[in-house]
Image (cartoon, rainbow, N blue to C red; front, side, top):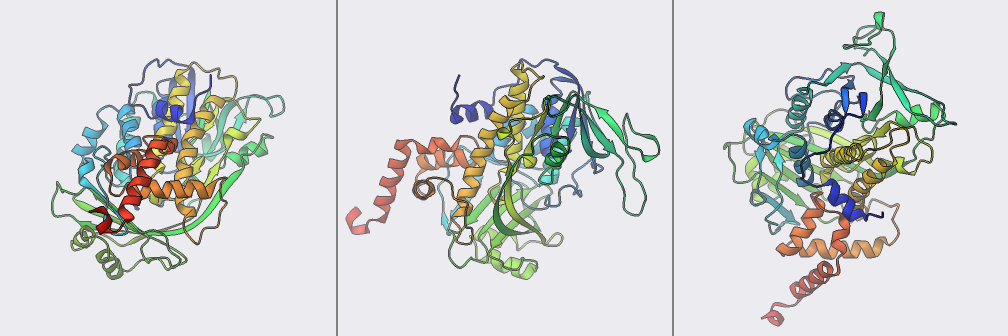
Length: 488
């Protein structure tokens, strides 16, 4: 039966408890121990006798940076949609996060500014404010506490298949090798199946999840084995981030998070957007973003000066003690791999997280998208699927999540004068409608609720296409543009 994208999104973003779980396989293998991989492992723990996470980094026992996530020092936002899924997968997650020092915000402790103008609160959407390492460590601790989940510290170097790509078949295992450490000839691997003397081995699997991130090698492996390779779509964004940490004087701030953005102009501003969040350890985390081939913001004096040009909360936050250096990060493009378009694909194999789609991080969609991918996997496995064929129902659901996030992020990027397509069909009309709704959301709470529900990944973007929403936005915008004497 046909199910609209909005209904699929609503089904995946539900907060209903996970039910009807049953064991479908002996062993599942997840490639990658970052957030997307950990959430996939949590879902698979309901359906597999054992779950093995293959990760080349030695995963730290507590919150700490690691090589596999070079951007983890930048601001990461867990949107309301992702927040609900983590609470669903790990009951009591918010309480544990708060006990560890994270700030679980209400909508009234979040502020947003459009070109310096304060936006009205929607009164409904909140965030978990913390650093990325803190959040990932908490998810990792909860996932690895499950009795049937373990980690192998090694490299995934290929896949094994039951049959060839011509006759069709399923993934049967993952070829693994030791991690090579700097300054040594070979590395080490832990866990069952490790080959002696640094040899490669095959970790048998009844189901495999690719969570290898933006640099995923799955397409290479499929093509080498005779399967189809997913096409890669890219949109150049060339955006730079600079993040500073500063001491916060109060452990329970009235403000938990803020975002200040500027409408794109022909001459890019030094700061296109600034985001601030209160995180664990009584710290402020502040990220400034710019584009247009400007030099990165590395100097703390310039960082403080630019924060002084934003709303007052930014200036107040950087008055505290600086904690560590200014961290920079550059992202050249947004990208997605369209697995749902492949006509031939192995059974018992899926891809999740940034390995499928990664967006401009400024919009904060990454972690919430990964959480909704996990929800799609849970729904797929709870629907009694035939694992002998490709997971097309999963990829169809996942596509709805990817399309929604891609539509939001690329539409905003395409509004920049330095980004030149590709433009989707009907772009001009869609852009005009989106601008009307965004403008009205600054002052009108009812429009803000609908707008933020989409941007916080709680509702599908099509919900904004309701005639009533657009008409309300047009009336509000028309009224606000009248001369004051006409409105009196």
